[in-house]
Length: 324
Length: 41
Image 1 (cartoon, rainbow over the protein chains, first blue to last red):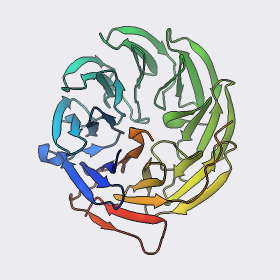
Image 2 (cartoon, rainbow over the protein chains, first blue to last red):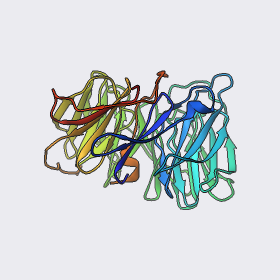
Image 3 (cartoon, each protein chain N blue to C red):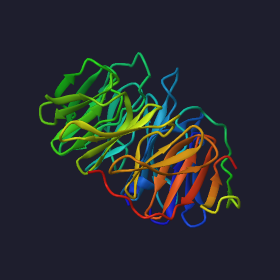
Image 4 (cartoon, rainbow over the protein chains, first blue to last red):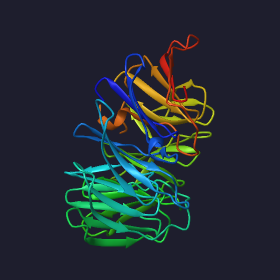
């Protein structure tokens, strides 16, 4: 963002680094506030703030926070106590910030102050198989897929439940709002398309396995990351798989799209780039450590590993074509 | 470039005890690495 790269580490520190040389401009350590906590989800960057949740799981005394830090200085703007850890991304909806806790609570916060506007307390999860449960926002509706296998829609302003749809199978991915539809993957290996207004199932079709993280829309294609084994491109309109590529030991936390390439990192430290149009592998690069998060700008990739190293990586290749 | 694109969540599972000090250096063995940053210092 601008000239800085922001990193949230599992050690509970946010770093703002100079993009050119990696020098730290500021750091913010949440451990100063008490017990250790980790950053596991993507932040919301809005109104000069970096808004992000910490994760302490759902163990005893799991108090976590949503933090809002000044982008330029790292100064604390506000923090909001939440009952359980947050793995989800923070999503903006007008002057609100939406997040989901590990205990399946949906939070609507005032973006300027961190005040809690409304909360939907979901059913406490009995299993943590699929951790990533990020919400989606479209217009005045907020959408959320819970561990109770149910997708719900809420009114943004009031938090009133508009509809709910039980799918009868665990939801494995985040929810993507695209057009007038919702798209999400389930553990049985199918992709669902739901009507945003009613929750009616428009289509469900097999995609060859369970897919995690948030689906990424590229034109009328969806990029999906499959557990630890594959990456896939799906034609959303025709409800068919365009291509699926096996990836040995996939360790990325979500799929990434960069300059027409679909990126996947592995436990062995390999970063693979697949051509969007047909899924053919174009290049790979060996890093040291298990690859988790990847950031990017037009020129460079910023590859984070489980061991806590961030690499600023420049690859001199032409842009590849988009998925057809 | 989206604002979200430049954020890198380093670690998804497991807590790593860490200091806030950093190490910044280039990797002389790999010219494609412009710099690297160790969040553990």
